[in-house]
Each structure stands twice: as structure tokens, then as C-alpha cells.
Image 1: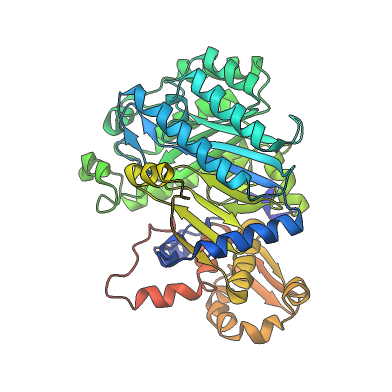
Image 2: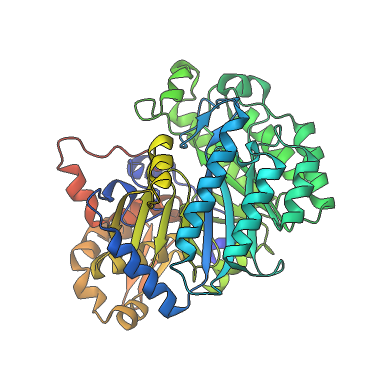
Length: 467
């Protein structure tokens, strides 16, 4: 039986021992390593290599506006009731996309598209049409059956008419932030959506023939406990989303000012959080969901599960994702592209972003060019985090190295994890055991060359806890 089909094996003592702070590995190297000295010529060369390889594209648009503040949120957002701010921003995103379209080969196919934020449905239906039609003029889209075209929504802030309009524009997937149905928890984080609202919208999305519905939940929120989370989960299971994400709330008000509005004394203790996670994973697995890894679950026939089975799963800035063959082109404030061997991040400040666009410049603020060692370690971490195994023969074939010699130091560091039953290592490679799945981030950290450098800095990078 595949490890992903097995009930999770829970060892609380091991979890507590290994539950350190560490990266989520939506990229490697991670975003704190990006450099302001990055040269855009490296980006242009990466695009040339993408064209020569004829790789398809995944497009991401960051729409930062929200009309209310969710206290837990760590996203780059702009809270405003001024709807007039959206059209100038949409026009600049189109301008940015046009600059890139001139660099990519004609007929470059878009196999994935994602609108995130913020709350993308903050923009009007007309502005949605403007942005989507411009994107279709600039790039060739895969058809509705093979392409994945998704949008994030706040279920209490969008009408079924707008969702019908988005379906007409070509969107076929929806990710909705549910977070928690408990009224006390919602009040504590200033995020409101009733079960009735979510159920009504879910039924409308199915009638509109959206191919996939995903729901996001958070555990560890203020006033949340095992019973309240269990009740929320049961309601979600009754709604039957195709995918489900269960994120750990990391209370870091020193990084995210809005989190300072959350009363620390209302947060569940670490033992309660662990119990919530344990119960949630068991509940979702018992309901038939496959535990993809870390924070993602999906029904057995979902494309995410199929991608994992077929070796097409990847970890990127949206979490676990299909279409690992695509280069990622991201537009909008703070968005991060991943093209060939470079990462490129746009300006995080809206004024700076718009000023650069008005000057006809790409709004790049920082980036990173991966060397051969970075590419190797990115492959290793992605392989472990997506498939819970690392075949040595595959590394030897792709990178022309002897893995056991190259990673001699790392294999020595992994030895205690063998003794603790988290992994096995033999001549064929590394396999993560069931007991190690929850600690996959900790296993991947062994291969992260930048962590030791970060720890020695005067101001070390502050990550959230693994669990």
C-alpha cells in the first residue's frame, strides 16, 4: 500500500522533539535569499532558455485589494473600500504582461492560471473581463479540459452571478477561504462566512460546472479548540470539496501588523494545536481524502492525487500543484516568478510597482539565479516533499553525481532520523516512513545549505514552527 493511502502514524514525543521553526519550501532557495542586486539580464536569458525548451506557462496574478481586514492574514494586501483603485492596477498588470509577452515565443501555451490576493473578486466584472481578455490576446490558452484556471474567493463576498461570469471567462477551478465556521472564532479574527453562505455558493459553482472546488481552513486560531474544529470539518466534509488545505496559524505579529489585533491569551496552547491537527488528519482520512502532504488533502480522483501518482506534482508558491513542466510567470505587486533557473520578485509596495510600470520598466525588485548546486538541492527537496522518497539513481542520472558521496554530510545528519523511525536509507535512496510524513519539512531542512548561513547572521531569519 502506498504511504499516501495509509492512515497517518502519530508519535507526539517525536513531533515535539523535531517541531522546530523552518521554511515551508514553496521555493528553494527560499524568498529571504533573494537579492536586490539581481540583474534583469539573468531574467532575459532565462526566458530565452524557456523558449528554446518550449516549456508551457503557469500565470499568476496578484490582486492585493480587500474590503475588510482578516486579523490572521500574512498576505501582501491593501484594505480599502475605494473600488476606483482597482482599474488603474488592472491596467498596469496588463501592461506588465504585455512586456513579458514580447519576450516569450509566439504561441506560448498557458496551461495554468491563478488569480490570488488579497481578494481577486474585489475588482468588477468588467475589470475581470478586461484582464482575462487581454491575457488571452497575449497568450495561447490550453482548452477547458486540460487547463487549470483558478481563482481565490471569499465566499461571503462574492455573488453566484459573478462566479457565473468568471466561468464564462474560462475559470474552471475555485479556491475559497473558509477558515472556520465557529461564530466566536470568526469574530476573534474578523472573518465572516456562514455555513449557509458557503453551501449555497458551493451548489451554485457545481451547477455552473466548475471542475474543482477547494476549501482552505486554518487550525490554531484564537478561541478555536478540538470540538469547534471537528464541527467545522464535518460541515466541510458534508459540502464535499475536491481539495482541502489545512494551514497552521503562525502568530507572528512582529512580521504581520494585523496579527497584533489578535489576543494572545485567546490562542490555543501548543498541546491543543497538536491535538487539533491529529484529529483533523484522522477525520479527513476517514472521510476518504488522500493526505497529499503537509497541509493538502484531496479526493482520490482529484488531479492533485493523480499528479502525485504520475510524478507530475510540484511544490510552488501556491503550495502543492500539478503541471510541474511549466515555467511560472507572475505579475502584479509582490508576485514571484520562477522561470528556468531564476526567481524574480516584483516590488512589494503598490506605489513603487505602479511608478515602475508608468516608466515602462519591469517592476522587479529582487531575484535569485540558481547555480548547479541550488538546482540539485531544489530537486532533492521537491522530490522529498512531494513523494516522500529520493531515488539515488535518478539524481545520478540527472545531475551526474554520486549522491552518497555528494551528500555524505547530510546523510550523517539524517542518521538520528533513521533511529527514530522517520526515514530509511539504503543503496537505492531515501524513503520517508509514515511516522516521518508530518516532519517532512524538518527532513528537507538537512539539505538546505542556506539555513546554516542564516543562523549565523546577526538578525537570523525567523520562520514559523513546522507544526
